[in-house]
Every structure is written in structure tokens, then in C-alpha cells.
Image (cartoon, rainbow, N blue to C red; front, side, top):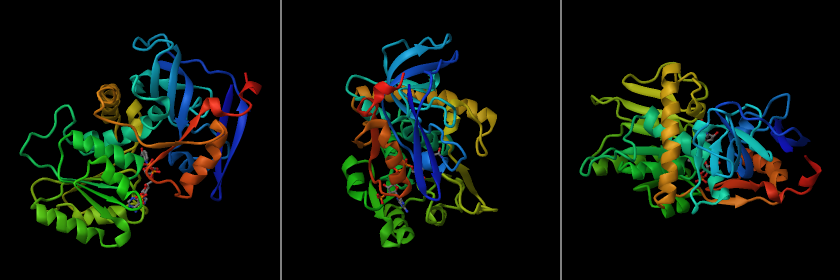
Length: 357
Ligand SMILES: NC(=O)c1ccc[n+]([C@@H]2O[C@H](COP(=O)([O-])OP(=O)(O)OC[C@H]3O[C@@H](n4cnc5c(N)ncnc54)[C@H](OP(=O)(O)O)[C@@H]3O)[C@@H](O)[C@H]2O)c1
């Protein structure tokens, strides 16, 4: 089968199309015939390696084969799935492997292309809000009359947009988000109560005014950007004095890492690998087990939300030439040329697929 390996050197992304055997699922895994996939910023961030690896993590397709302990999926099922990052058999290929626990059904109203936008980015948002920040889940929302303000930095990014949608379902508010060129898109999803433009340079003052006007203190913030001092702005805004501790969770750790956080403030980094139970610096083994169970439940809950039309995937743009467009797509992410959408590749659009077996 065809597989695409990706590498980045000195800001230039290159790729390699190669012929590899169709992989076999292990006992708790699912082998999926990929119909559509997309790219994540991780694909360039983690591709400065000596070899070109198949970086694709978002799978949408049909189940081809299941491991012997998999009881909830069968061949032919329409699914989306989160591939184990950096493991072999990613989604830039005709067939890909995912843990059964991070695989979920796509209801009939959700296309494979839409489904491909979901697995990695939506789970990052869900882990940030519900595991790292400990906010109420959508199935047990904030009671009417109670207010839980939330700041989401980067509302037009895929992760930020999913966070906004989940925050709305959880009944959080006021929801304040920071966006730039994607502000109109953020407005259109109708989830944020306030949108502040980071290009105007007075983010902190603008958000503080909103908090003051609303008469609330900020205790929860998700920094879905973690660049350009975004986290420093968040720190200025979090309440450090009240009895409740302010919490910030970030998609990337601060650069350089802060040696001492302001007292009374809880910092964490969300890393989506905990969705399949892998511990990391800000998530110990015990917490990672909890995250794995949470991800199992939340992915299945997403199927319900999608089927009922209470949640929609991210906007996407199908790239010409299927998997052969991965190189260009990852380069566009590296060059920060993508706003408010995912770049999706359809395997069937790949020229010369019949050369591979
Ligand atoms: N730790 C993890 O497990 C994990 C998982 C997923 C993603 N991530 C990281 O999270 C980040 C977002 O990922 P993604 O897939 O959501 O990316 P994405 O959709 O490609 O993000 C692009 C968006 O970032 C926004 N942005 C850039 N600079 C900004 C700023 N200073 N303030 C506010 N918004 C800004 C842009 O907004 P405008 O167009 O409005 O200007 C643009 O829409 C990436 O750094 C990624 O590597 C980490």
C-alpha cells in the first residue's frame, strides 16, 4: 500500500511516497481503510528527524480488520480514529492503525472528510477543559444561574474552536476568546460571548475590562496558542488572590519554561497522547489511565453529539492530489498560512494509487 513519510529541515517540509505492507492490528487495535485524513501542526513540529515518518494521526474511513480483543467494531463500520502519535501505520496511507479506545463511529450525517478533522484536535480541547481544568462536562453542565467564566486563547484554531464548542455545551460563561483573522469565523459558530482581537495589542486590558464589566474573576484559561507570549497575557488575567486557585493549561509549554509560577496558580500542559493512556511530564501514570477512560467515553459521546446535530466538525478544504498533497499541506501549517480550517486529503484522489499493492 502507499504510505507518505514526512520530514522538515531548515523550515522546508519534504515527503516520500513508499510502498509498504498493509499492517496487522494488535489485539486492542483496529485496522482502518483510510478514506480521508488531515494534517496537524504536530506534523511539522515533530518532523525534524533523520527519517521521514508517517505523521498522519487523524483517520476517517471504514474498519477493515479488528484485533482479537476488540468487541465494539466490525469490518465495514464507518469510523474516525486517533492514531497513536509517532507509532508506525499512521493515516498518511491507504490503511492505518488506531487503538480501539480512540476509535468512534461516524453517524450518517458526518462525512469522512468532516470526520477527519475531529480526532486529535477535538480530544486536545476536551482533555484541556475537562481533565486539566476540571470544568463540568457537557453531560453534567453548569447549573442555570451559576457562572463559570473561561478564557480560550486562539478561538479560531482547530483546538480552540473545539474548546469553544464544548465550553458552550458545558454551559460555561462568560466565554471570552482571543482571535485575529479568524474572528469572523469564530463569531459564526456562536459559542463565544466575547471575541478580542490579538492584533490590536491591548489584549490584557480588553479582556480585563470584559471581566470587570461582567463582575467576574477568571479562574480557568486554556491557551490553545502558546506562542507570542499568549500565556503571559493569560497569567495577567487569572485571579491569583481569591480562595479558588486560577488554572491555566497550555498546548505547548512556555518557551523558555517558567521556573516559578505565581503563587496560587496551577499550571499544566495538555498533551493529547494521554488520550491513549500515555503519561507525560504534566500527567502521571495514574492520571493518564483516567484520561484514557475519559477519552474512550468522550469519543463515543461525540458520536451522539454529531448524530443529534449538537456539535459539528471543523471547516475543511480538500487538497488536490490526495496524499501527494501532504507535503504542501504540512508546509502551509508551518508557514502559518492556515486559518479557521483543516487541510483534508482524500486517499482516492491520489494519482497513481494502483502502482502500490
Ligand atoms: N499539546 C497537544 O497535545 C496539542 C494537540 C493539538 C495541537 N497542539 C498545538 O496547538 C496549537 C493549535 O493547533 P491547531 O491544530 O488548532 O492549529 P491551527 O488550527 O492550524 O491554528 C491556526 C490558528 O492559530 C491562531 N493563532 C495564531 N497566533 C495566534 C495568537 N497570537 N493569538 C490567537 N490566535 C492565534 C490563528 O488565528 P487567526 O487566524 O484568528 O489569526 C489560526 O487560526 C498548535 O501549536 C499545535 O501544535 C498541541
